[in-house]
Image 1 (cartoon, rainbow, N blue to C red):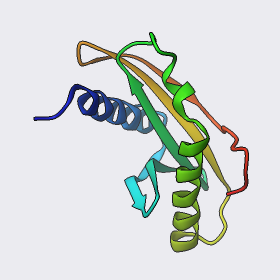
Image 2: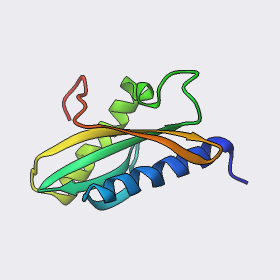
Image 3: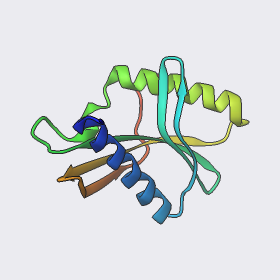
Image 4: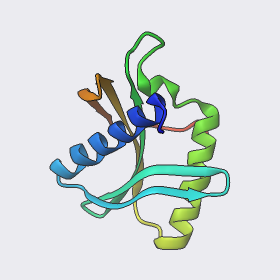
Length: 123
């Protein structure tokens, strides 16, 4: 049986994919994993690769979902981004986005897209 947290995460990730698809983005891959890192969704939009971190929460009692993309998570994402770029592309323009999703009673209440976030270190 799936935990409530994993159900919220699954619903959030599907909501993010639906959101990106409706905006015309081409979804290339979901849950790209490498040792020590993961990217939730990888999309292409007009020649640009976009690495998307999805954060879903059932409430904002402990803060907004996007606030949980902390330094350790950024480092893990950076590992996966480096790996993806080396493996699949020849130096295309890219950016990193966050999609924050609020879910209540297993229904999506809000999707907030934050494009072009910056990390404190190089990819």
